[in-house]
Length: 84
Image (cartoon, rainbow, N blue to C red; front, side):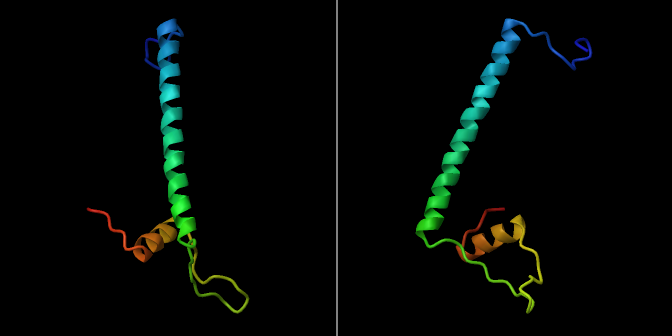
């Protein structure tokens, strides 16, 4: 498997490189979580998010609410535009 490039020898250099990559990913993940926390705090301070959808008399939604709908609703209700 080593000649085919599917595996590497677990020498000190390779292990150190993997540990550095892992530490870098953990730091990136922590940074992203902090950014999300700040966003959630801003949303919370603004009174949260409210979504209005039409439902049947038995309180079943006519339409689904998925990530795409939530993002689009959030962006339009807050007048946020992304450059194309």
